[in-house]
Image (cartoon, rainbow, N blue to C red; front, side, top):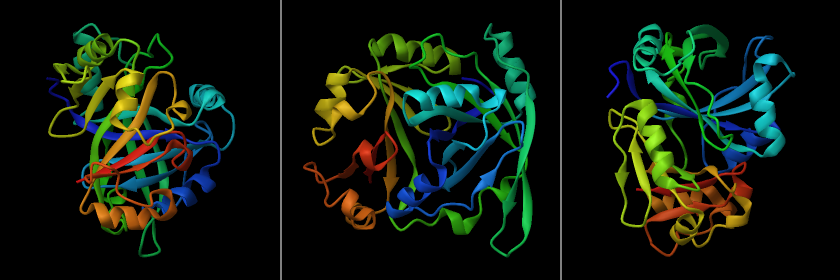
Length: 285
């Protein structure tokens, strides 16, 4: 287990129309932050959906720059889960820890963005990040770590209350040609032991009781979620986001027409990729 990496911090959902995506996620029962604008160098903007320890980030391109080339390349193919971030105690020490294990982590980078606060004021969110090496397989998740230097202007209490009762990220489910091999690669990168599932899936904990990554074949995913239009999901890559909610019936009601009822298990609400920017969204208690 890595000493400097706490566990999953947030996932990045790449979207082509940032403001339209924000409206769509509001209709699913989420409270969104005001739109953030990154530096001119980064050329991107975002909305966040905050939970207790982790969050979702809707990320879009505002102006093409060299810094957002990988995001634009992803969006040329599809929308959906593009990156996963881990919480770093110290980005400097975390990068050094990976480098000592033979993993070519990038040197840390400092950046920030302005934040509109609930009292009408304005703050500055500051982060220090580093990247794991870019995956050779373009379908694999890009990974980075984030040291939050101003948590008080990101984890704002009012933004953590959602009409659908969402509380945290439980799982990121990934379609893989070879689930065992993909899980082994992820486990190596974050120093966690993969665990075999009874249905042929493989799970990798992110650490500190945070979300799990679960790798499975396309057939296994289709069997798990028979109501999903499987053809609308990528052939490979992160495909399903599972969130914990307080009450299934409440979550279904908040999502409205996108999820008219609890599914056949009676324990979850499943929203198809056509309603959630290319990923399947699942609510579970």
